Length: 309
Ligand code: UDP
Ligand code: MN
Image (cartoon, rainbow, N blue to C red):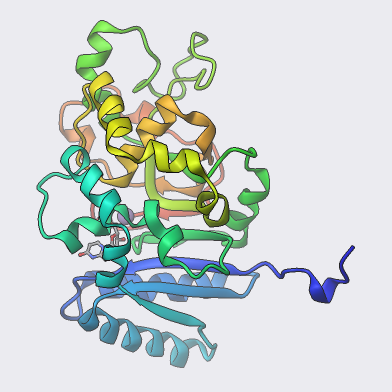
């Protein structure tokens, strides 16, 4: 028994990636609006951890001081250098880019898309859990609700993710689906009773909102196995999977092969608004994928979609 003063107080670490910003741009306004929005909705003290390059850091500092002045609230934050961070996850990036990057480029621009997988090496050891957010989000409700989801995690889960709300993984799996009877790539509301782990069809995951159990991940030997080259080769060959969405392609494959590692959050925690796939061959079924019956906590203006506020 520990008196309350000795219990480890829960920290609310929010991680953001803010890089390759060279001038005041839409990304810098999204960043500013999100900080402002999070401070407005939160019922708990947040700590911001921001991954930046040198120029982006200057812009971030300016945007944060605008928020501080405007709201007359203090903001707790620290910066992490993208190049140092990229070095710490080099091995992961090297394994993943051939399968999940559209056009592998310089090592740090590639690393950007895989930060969530190696954040446990970048974050201070004192952080047990973290929430990694895209900048193009808008919280309709308290961000503490997101942290509460950690309490619902099954014991084996390392990551918490909400579903992808487009048919992108139906598209990627079309060769595999032609030959195999599977619910993978099907939409959630399609009733399927054949698959025990995803009995309702499985749309894959979106990584705009990622809940990470950093401590469990640091102690996991299984995680090191699933991110090594032979495991990724095995999974991508089995499903003839060639993606272009970085970490979320890998999470989707984990959802097929190692579902115990992922806790599925409901779609209200990452309500994506991009409709690109509706106009690119999937107008007949797009709405089945985008349908979300849960209360919206987070809106995600992905593919530069304007968020109705
Ligand atoms: N990002 C960044 N610099 C860039 C592009 C993206 O730091 O030049 C970060 C930013 O945090 C952004 C995230 O990467 O929210 C993912 O990109 P985006 O949200 O635009 O992708 P989408 O959700 O539309 O797929
Ligand atoms: Mn996004």
